Structures are given as C-alpha cells and as structure tokens.
Image (cartoon, each protein chain N blue to C red):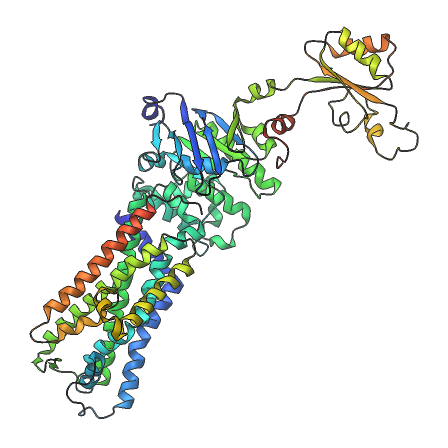
Length: 276
Length: 352
C-alpha cells in the first residue's frame, strides 16, 4: 500500500501542471501582503472590529504580520484553494480513465477499493500541502512586511507569539480538513466520467453554487448544510475562549461530506464497468 | 508456481467461462452465452470481426466489466471476485496501449509495478529492465512515452504484461495498427512467450496472424462463440472441392455424379472462383479477365461444374472427364482457405 501511495504521490507532485498550481498558490499571499503594505504604510493604524471576519483580519494586520496568514487563507478559500483541490481530485480517476491507464491499473491488479483509497490519500496530501504553503508563505511575507509580536485575537485578548503560531497551525489544519472534504466530493465526481476537465469544472460549479446560496439571506436555513458554509469558521480558533461548538460543527460537516461522497465514490467505482 | 497452484481447481483450462453474457444497459447483447475453454499451455486465437464481442469478453475476463449472466474463471479462480487474487499471475494488453504520455517508458512500467501489492519492490528495477529488454525497448527506456512510435507503444504495453513471470497472457489485438515489421516482431514475441510455457490468449481479426501462431481458435460472431477447437479441427470443417471449367457443364456433371462425388453443382459464368485456386491448369486467370485479352477466347459459353472432392483422386477425375469427351478448360482442387472458413462462420462483412 505504501509503495503504491508513494508512487502516486510522486506522480501528482511531479506533474508540471500541479507544481504550477502550487506555485500560483504561493504567489498569492505574497501579492496580498505587498498590496496591503503599500495601501497601509502606517503600521500604527488599525482599530477594533469591522464588518465580517475578513475585515477584522485586515484591521489587525497593520499591527501584526501574523494576520497576513489569516487574510491569505480566507481570500484563497474563496476560489484558489478549491481550484487546486478540484484539479487534483477531479483528475484523479477521470484522468486515468481518459488516458486508459485505469484499465491497466485494475488489471495489475491494483484493487478498486485500494486504488480509490490511494487516490483519496493523495488528494488529501496535496490539499494539505497547498494549505500549508499558503500559511507558510503568508507568515514569512507577513513577518517581512509588518511588525511581528504578541497576537491580539479577534476577542480582544492578546496571546504570546508562540500561542498565536500554534493557533495558526490549527487554523491551517482546519482549512486542510475542509479541503479534504472537498477532495472527497471531487473524487466522487471523478469516478463518474472519463473527462477530467468535466469533473474539475463540475466541482468548481458546486463550490461556487454553494457559496452563492450561502450568501442569499432568504436561503439561510440551508446554509449550515452547504459544503462551503463552515470553511471560514476557522476564526473560532482566534478567540478566547475558543468557540469549540462552531469549530466542531464545521468539522462534523467536513466529516459528513467526506463520508457521504467517499461512500458514493466507492459504491460507484466498485460496481461500474470500466469501458475506457 | 505454475502448475501446482492452478492444478488443483481446473487442471486443464487457463480460461473457462460458462454461459458468459453481457447485456449493455441499452439492451444490446454484446456477449451471448459464451463458453470458452482455453487449454493450459495453448496459444488460443480469439477471432471475430470488430464488434463481435471479443473485447467485451476480455474485459469481463479481467474483471473490468461485470457479466450480466454466466461466470468466468482465470486459472481456476472465479472472476471478477477473484481479481485481486489471480490477476497478478496474468499479464494483459487490453484495447491498445495506455500510459501517461509525460512519463518515460521506464517510469510508466514502474508505476504499474508499484500498484501491484504482490510485486517485490527490491527486484522492481531488474524486472522492469528485463521486460523492456524482451520487447527491445531497453534503449528507449528513458524516453518519454509521447515520443514513442506506435510499434514501441504496443511493445511497451506487452512489456507491462511481462513485468513478472505469468501463467497466462491475454493480448487484445496486439498487432493492431502495426507495420509488417512490427507485426512480425510481436508475433515472434508471442511465440517466445508461449515457448516459456505461458498460456497465450490472443484476440485478433487478422486471420493470417492466428494461422501462424495459434494452436487453438475460438470464433466469435455477433456475441456468440460459433466455433472453438484446435486449428486442424477448424480446417476439417471445410471440405475440398473440385471445380471444372468447361463449355459443356451438363456432361461434366454426369461424370462427376458417376464418380460418386457429393454436392455436384454448376455455376453459370466463370468468375474469380478458379483464379485463386491451388490450380492444376493455368488459363483460368485469362478467362476471368473481364475484357477478354487478345488471344484468349471469350469466357462466354463456359460454365463451371463443381463437387466435393471427398476421397476421390483428382487426376482420376480429370482423366474420366477427358475420356467422357468433356472439354476441360480449367480444372482445380480448392481447399477452403481459413479465410473462407471464417467468412462461413462469421458471415459477410468480416473485417479482414
């Protein structure tokens, strides 16, 4: 199992297209950081709570470079990170079917369930990697462009820098979990077609549709059940005390989506004829 | 590990299916109650026109598609349930080669080998090199697949089937799209694989190919297996005929009937029937030329009489004809070619 996983991981991380995606992901926090630095040249400015989560982060950034990580994550969560995950997940099975390599993998035999598990593992790893790249680049850029010190959280409490960084680690893991759930959706879509582009587009349409519905006040009742609804709830980690109930509901949503679509992918993939 | 592991269950069949059936969701019956019996150690040619159900059958054998009826077993292990237990003993090429174009031949094979949980990673490199060497691709191992020629791609696919010692190799149209040289190389490779004691199951719509390398054949026609047996058995299904070209077919018929030959027939004009024959007399070619070449008489007025040769000696028939005063313009004994037999089995529209 490990050898197969390592081989698939090498393949995904060795593809120029995927490396380009990671590179683009890394550039965004830099650009955001520089733009914000140019727009707010006075590090002493800032103030208390604005409108939404994003605005709160922006207010904090001027005083502390660590907040660039949260700004970068919340900005990239709208489109860039989902695209990165959608590409790798949508391509995972559909791409193999498109190249015809799927039939050879199954004739090896790779085992249908095992192949699916390995593919999902690779998607999760890739999403995790992309998320950590965003946090890492944003942290370095934030430190270079803004002052760094004890972190004043959204609840107004100030915690030490190591405590702040630990919270950043958990925030990154939370976002990675959200991306893993999206990856399961992508994997399921990917088992239904042999056109990778179609699968990728479908996943993106789902993401955008979910975000749109989530922003319609009249549909607020549906909100908590949408796949994207809890993505930005990582700000619960930036409060004292931590808003664990929101956080847990978010994680529950991710787990539910991962299980639901994971089972769907498995049911579909282990019973469908491979005709490509 | 070859004979003992398979020997217990079904001693003599590498592939066996019973009533194997595949009905597509649209209702089309692609494979209709096929009972294959591929003897251990044979080179089995799986013949049939395009669209006769060969590839669908192979997909079911390999567990890629699920039968809607009947059952199949590879090396005595039921498919598709036994896929992960038995397929590592089976090499396969299904519907053309398929690899990642941006990887080298070597990396592509390494990838398939890594997917095999029973393959020993320590020997992977050696096994891959050996497989590449066997198909003559060792020098192109580090070339990207997209730069391979069609023949190289096909050979790489065969190499992927040779990554480990196999008891059975299933090759679906292995020479499809190859030039004559490539075809010969693949044929030689198949002979070599068979010589090692591996059972080879090769599908093809090329008769010549099957005739040259196979010991057994199965013939598919619109989803049904219409013949299965050894090559000599197939040949025996066709009877040799004697054909006389003459201006007086009635007289010829009398002679042939008097000799006790079966299925005596006449056919009006001389067409190509005599031309390709194993030929006793030559002028048939000229006679069948449509616009009578100068010097040769017009074909009109001539007809053919033919009968099943049976045990009769052709020279005696010829002598009897001449003695009876029948003007013999052409005389031929024709064994139906394999092609004739196949067309007979599979119907017109056979894609040769």
